[in-house]
Length: 416
Image 1 (spheres, one colour):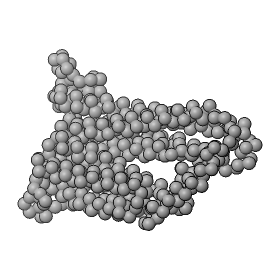
Image 2 (tube, one colour):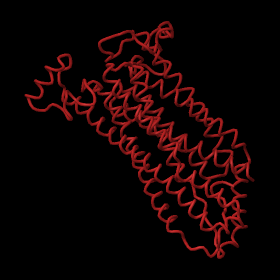
Image 3 (cartoon, one colour):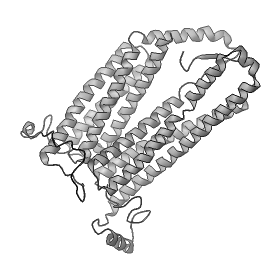
């Protein structure tokens, strides 16, 4: 059985006030995670907007902006700022782009810290509740020895602890990457890592949201105990819908798809951080004798030579062409694999949820490819380029959701 397994409890037991309170607290946690998830998407969009408007160094210091908590506005503030940072004249629009991104990212970090602390509180309070319940009802527990184990399994499922703490560690490291992005003057590997850190934060929050929304174990009272057989038949029917193909095998394929998509997003980050997005301006292939220009020896050197600033890139034209072409080839490989995976799942199962997730992957993939082509065709318009980043994030979330659902169904097949 899965998390929808059936647990028979004491028919005459009154509702536990502590359990009711924990249920309310769990809903609060879910709302916090959902809010942080939406805020994370906004932060990714703002990060892309900041990068594409060349505002990464709009504030040459961190975490302040020219020594201020906001942006220099008055003539006096601007004079003082330019005296302190003579190499970076104040550009108010770029400075605001950078600071707004920092404000939202800081808010996300604080919210994730609250989620981590609240998760710790819920885990300990639930364990305390379980200990009290087990002490007060030792006689019932002795007649049903599996109840405690089942409840503990439910506690671990309902209140994850390691995952929220991992997200907190990731967001702390992400803040450090944000600082290094400024202090190391847009070093490409740091900019790419900062982008991947944002995507990692988003994906882990989404995974936490999926974990928290897994259906809890529901107690069955005497009035509804006669429906147990019907519920078991429903579970068998669900298993029959997915056993036509090996869910376990497709879980592995879906995980491979996540790895491939992650690599492609990293390639996109490398392309953007090295200002190679417009190095090829023709479709479907690059202009001129592009094959002769490819240089894989130097195009993916992570540690660049020392420079005062890496703004607007440091690679030669042929090296940027190599980066761009590799990103295009990666897009082809990623598209072929995800189309194959989504079609396999969609056509080989009758489970509506799996079909819906597969369709979502295909639709978002089609939009993403269209946006990538539009970036070249229309010479990287700002709104299209930002959308390209956001749809990449949504595509990753849809693939994670598909993988998570496949894994759930694989367990159902095993427990059949």
